[in-house]
Image 1 (cartoon, rainbow, N blue to C red):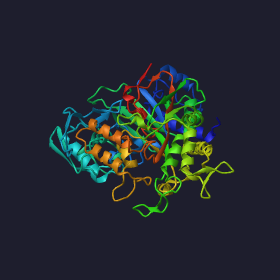
Image 2: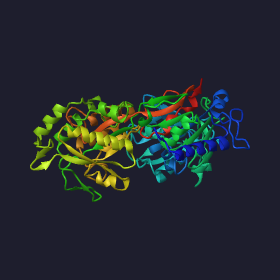
Image 3: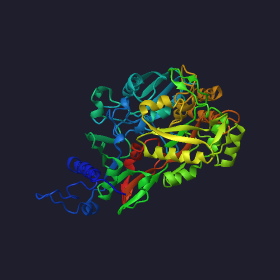
Length: 553
């Protein structure tokens, strides 16, 4: 694969910054690397790294979009959205376990009132921020009330008030029942009330596993293990994260200057001496919406909605049956992915009734039943109109473009003409109300399902595509009002399909889910990356959720 000299130089510049400024990444210690001499010559850097590199340091490469523009502040998105993970710097009340059930971090106990309107959480009493101040329930209450009033990413509209009743007890008073609150607590880092201000994101103080020692914007961020951490001491003491484009990341791996670097399926047929290609399963899915109402509708915001072709449920069912997901995985993802049937595959609340088998003959039968008969050119027609639609994709996303093209090729075999169009996000959201769009979703919370399928407040349709089903809404509302998280799972499953209603193949099928994309990384031989839980959407920070448990052989 050809790479540009400019990309290679950018990679090298970033790595030299990590070496010179940080002095803490694997292979960047004084004992492991000889610096450039007066004549500008360097010694055998890669060999020195292999022989003498520190065994408690690691250099990780992520994409530029992983760098949090607003800094490492949970109020402005750190730990949520594209950065979904349990924050490295701050502690959280709960965590998600490998099976995506809930475990404890700061919390030691949690109780919910019968009406779901009050959550009482007891926290540890032995936790300190890295400036030496004790972390108390007052800090927890301050964090959540601040997020309620200012969060730019997460939804905290269900929270009325967080109240500290003593040093180790915080009570969450809710505006409405919210059984999945523990999943929100798992990505909400606790802030120090005494040290929070406008520049917190640039110089964060936390109580988590790592201290952020340095952030060179656009280049790198350096973490060091928190010596006063209340949990098990991190095995990996120094973590340097570099931000690079894909080709520069690959150049860094080829030069032996990174220990773990993200990559794409398009690089997966290559080999690099001294590195293995690791693949991690995800719920980072790709799929497209099918507007489920006829054209002529209008959203609450006055946006034109509806599509005459996709509004027929038989057409939507035919499209779902007529796509060979395994073929997509092989041809678009080089084999690195899994079929997607919902936005919550493999989650505790996933309903296996979502799964379908590739059946093009059944798809053609459905189209015939809907009145779409084959025309002379192989494209189906009905009342003088050809069967088809435009499928949009984000213009900057080559994988979604390839998936859109593959979808078009497969649906043409059914007699459906699909044209693809690259678009910007400035227009995509509105246009998706009438024109299918290739999306990316996936999170460790049932709210992902709710946000896609539930009728939006003060609207006749769901937010991202015109669709609404009162019974599906009812199940989701009941799930949120459920007296316990575990009891809510069954209701989320019923919202997917209860035998008569739902969003699966035999139901309304307003979205077509295609693939879950494996997250790929080049990993230096000898680096043991601890077992990963299912990664959410976003090929970035999830990989280092448990970097404290990584080791070198």
